[in-house]
Structures are given as structure tokens and as C-alpha cells.
Length: 181
Image (cartoon, rainbow, N blue to C red; front, side, top):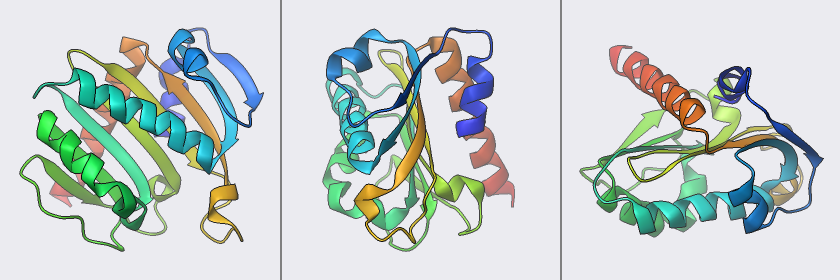
């Protein structure tokens, strides 16, 4: 998904912020498309900004795609994601199946094999009539890092509709391939 995001950004302006300790809400909102390197807490904050926007702006429209690397990473925030499933047409959750999320009619878990490239990526993609935004990151350290919250990620954020639409289409292709396989 990360490589797809970079390809989708192709000819569009992308601000390179290099390594950051944290990002402000203002930077997140004002810059349409940017790249950065950060640790897990920064990505958690940016994911929370998107999750909150979904809850505030989505009303049974559009699809949400999220990747947790491992589904167990979703467990502490499952209540938030069940609420997101309530207000979304469909929520697809990608991850290595090391935990079983509760059942919800609008939520579907997409199993990733441990050695799949996508199993090392963290993403939140909202493709709805009222919100189009994507945060995609690739884990540089993996779960063997001594401190999970200190893992480093190479990340990309965009609210450009053409990029978000392409990422949603890529996610749909992955879902179709999973269902056929």
C-alpha cells in the first residue's frame, strides 16, 4: 500500500518533512500530501485524527480500509472501530490474524500472512463522500524491536482525492484477490 501511495502521488507535489517527533493537527490539515519518518506514537495520533473525522463526518457512506499489521493491535481501540463500522458503509480491517475482532455486519477482517509485505504496513484510508484522506506507513523495524512504541515508520499522508481514490481501488483489488484465493 505504501508503494502504491508513492506511485499515486507521481506528478503531484509532495512535501518531504524527513524525520519528525510529532506533527500538529494544523500541519496535518493544511498540507495536502506529505512524507515523513516517525515512531508509533505519532502515527497513533494521526490515525486518531482520521478516526475522529470519520466519526464526525461519515453517515453510512463510503468505505474505510485499515491495516494494523496484526489484528491484536486493534484490540485496545476496538470500541472506536465498532463505532466507525456503525457509521460506514463498510469497514475492511487488514492484518495478521492473531486476535479475532468481534463480529459486526459492516466490518470484515482480511487475513494477511505473516510474511506478506502488507503485514508490515499501517494504514487508514477513508474514501467517503464527505471525507477522503489516507495515512499509509511501512514499519522499518518490525515486531522484533525491543520497544514496540519506538518502532520507526516511513509514512505518507494525503487528502488529494485522486490519490485516496487510487489507494481505495488498490485496497479493493486486495480484497477481491483474497476472496478469490
